[in-house]
Length: 272
Image 1: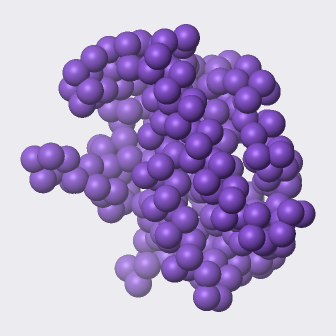
Image 2: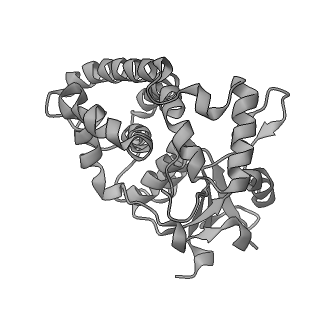
């Protein structure tokens, strides 16, 4: 099939040879596409390329800056199979909206949002984003920035230092009190989540029971960012938390957790 007739996923570029598709934001969309069995290609963008590219393809902003100006980031998909009334490819920003689009147009082999679960999954997303994601980002930053190409690394450092008033390496250095605190809090948040999930039964693998849903991919994306940026801690800590529940979830989703290879994907420089 021509690359002009399959879905394009816009994701964050890394150095060749370093882990591609490591960021939890892009991973959620990547898992959703894999679950649907939809053929897709990846365009890898550097940080400074994101806003001009998204504006050019007509992607909606995913947030606002403190000054009120629109903010653009990954993930975004462009679906040329399902076109707008103007005959243009449908462009969707934000992993949740991407999952909704996939359910609407690619219902097989199953729904990411089974009937009646969207409100509960929205609550789960809020918990995961507010209670878990921030600590994973702190733990990951000093490693992940080393995987970025120079222009993205410079951009990322500038944004982080403006936000936190400190260098990336100072935010949560390995072995520091901040590092230990983040891991302690993270374990507590996962244990709280496990206590709720146990209500589905001790053999339950997925967040909503026997059926995988988008909620599982939300959490899987966060776990995978830990696997990639803190592999020793994953093996020594997280795999054993809550009687191995989170390893069990990752293993249960292995069919859709396909590592991309950035040596053979399209980069932003190849965009028309």
